[in-house]
Image (cartoon, rainbow, N blue to C red):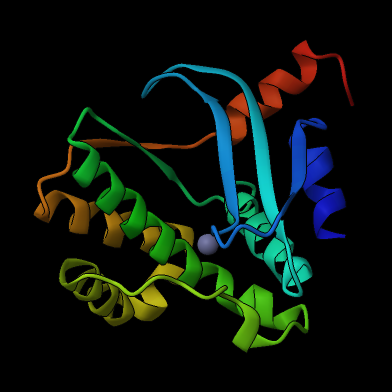
Length: 179
Ligand SMILES: [Zn+2]
């Protein structure tokens, strides 16, 4: 049901690969964002490791993609060092998890399997984790997410633009002549 609604929302631009389990984490990417104000065809690419958590892993990655139709912003980051870029991605990834978790558990999946085994966090990442946990409930609405994460990124001196991709995706629907 989730996959089907995303399949339609993203104009069938939803790709999924199952890879042999090499111990790397599952991923999702939103392709087609070319700048803070420019988008190409938006495509979602999910890659899942073939292990005993692959169903939960797939649902998890799809729930990241599902935040866009729910009205949550994505963020475009201005050029920064690879280290800062990783941190920025880490912040938005953890914030997504807070927003996704109630839906994941409503779908009836084991909450213990929401996350795969993760590498241990460094001190900075642990601090981000604690800060986001404090934001808690506020991350569970699109507006609260935007306000809290924007403030947090500003405080940490990131240069970014929030992105709302729904309109672009709907506009692409008519240009792709799909309904
Ligand atoms: Zn995730």
